[in-house]
Image 1 (cartoon, rainbow, N blue to C red):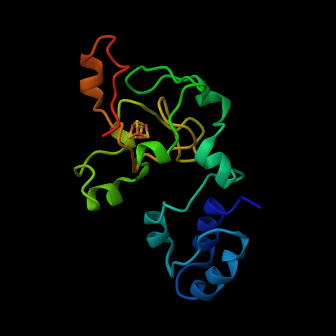
Image 2: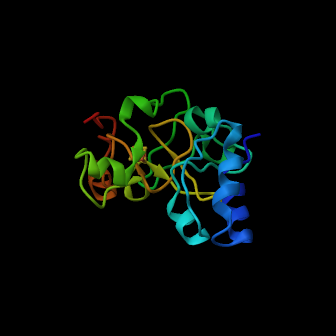
Image 3: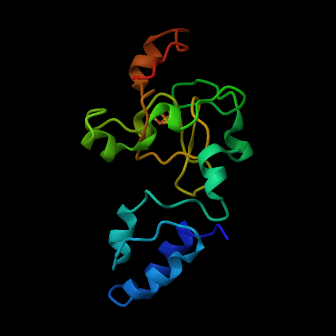
Length: 165
Ligand code: SF4
């Protein structure tokens, strides 16, 4: 089932280091991309790219719906999320912020966590949502709509012009 991401971390934390490598390979049979050879729980904490909240399918993670608390919530720059008017992740080059920096798409220090459109985690699963993009959002991700909170708050009412870089 789709309880893999966080469950896997918990598993690794329980088992500890070393002996996990072989077992982690076995766990990859459910369609997940389990190709890493992480051996410690600490390292796993950095490996957020393949994780999802418990019970959330890959489809839900990508396209939603997000939990009710986020559906029409306000972003951290007070933009209201409209679930009927969102970009797909693909359309906005959504990816890990580190990867985006590496690819030359953005500069270091820009991620969802400090973006005007981000709706911070409301249920303790480590993921939030976005006022512009569908699905679940990790604060360490990034997309081409990134906008600083300061910039957005300076635009009194002109927040509908975020462009796809
Ligand atoms: S960087 Fe993109 S996905 Fe992330 S919060 Fe901002 S607009 Fe949303």
